[in-house]
Length: 75
Image 1 (cartoon, helix red, strand yellow):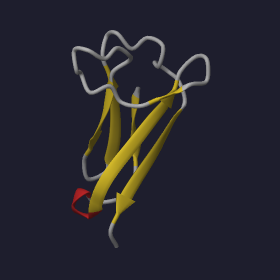
Image 2: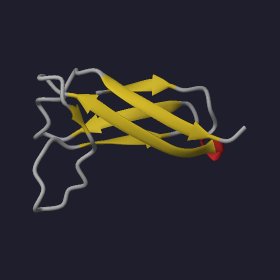
Image 3: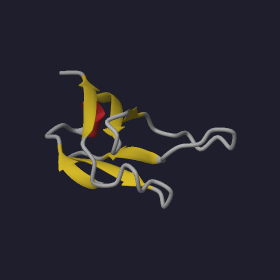
Image 4: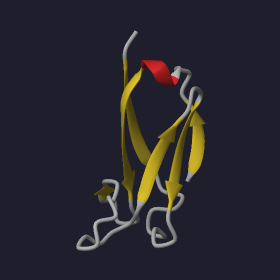
């Protein structure tokens, strides 16, 4: 889905929350891979400069869709 510069060092980041809006406007939370759950799969990876959001092959309904990311950090 992409990589986005956030301007923080990862030592200051306390947490990241991401939701993706699918084609019908529903907000999709990350799928944790549990075999009894269905849904699209994505996860966020944070480095010192970039928030990268990755999707799996079964995630066509959220590819290239809007997302919201909240990065909680300490000053």
